[in-house]
Amino acid sequence: MDRITITGIEAFGYHGVLEHERTYGQRFVVDVALGVDLSAAGASDDLADTVDYGTLAAEVADLVTGPPCDLIEALAERIAARCLSDPRVQAAEVTVHKPSAPVPVVAEEVSVTLRRVRS
Image 1 (cartoon, rainbow, N blue to C red):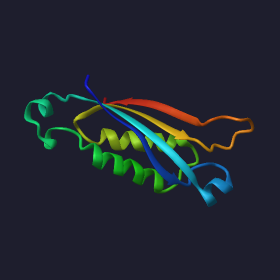
Image 2: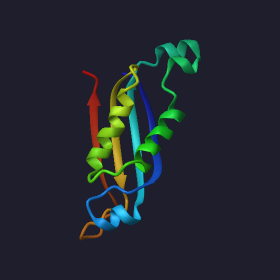
Image 3: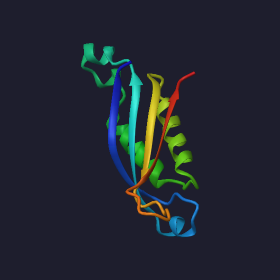
């Protein structure tokens, strides 16, 4: 399967289980990889035959800045569902990075990755 990958979508959100995460927010970074047949777009050279990754990136950022989730796992599910709402997308792999996650040891970031496939 062909892939469209968008890496490093940054947005400020209020996701987390701790009160200060909901009050002050923090930066999140999202990577999305879509499994999609790109042969029609390759042949036609027409944006209508593929996923508009500019629009998708903006919609992913809107999900990050939108209503908060307790868990980044839930945010990743919302993003994957949005990706799969396009009938051309057969699979979506989503990674949500939380660089400032409140963990009790030094850690560069916490992230979750999920893969969802159209049934």
